[in-house]
Length: 159
Image (cartoon, rainbow, N blue to C red; front, side, top):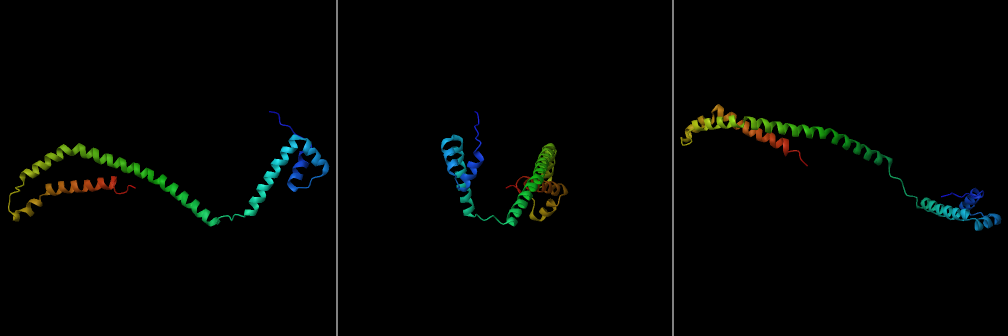
């Protein structure tokens, strides 16, 4: 598409902005398609500019904008830092599960052997001695602490 230009474009644009038309310029505008279109565009843009100036929309407080930008930056840094922590937590959970599965058969045999030595039908007076068995305390502690560790790694900080 060929763009047409006219030698009178600058004068027509200035007249369209100010509204000061000479008779010669009016006659040229009426006869030149390029200048007629230019007049319509300049008049529309001038009206829009005047309307925007009349509205006088107040600008927001720069301190609020600065504060919001700082919060957005902190959130971005926080997400970047915590993404590594989340992956480390997941890896630690996988390691705990793998170690637990690796030692499960031996631990189960240890639990069965410890339970076989307990006389659950004994009198209540002998219960503290049986509960004080080092093997039973160790197994119970490992089960409770392992469960708490898994819960902490997987459930405590979600959301």
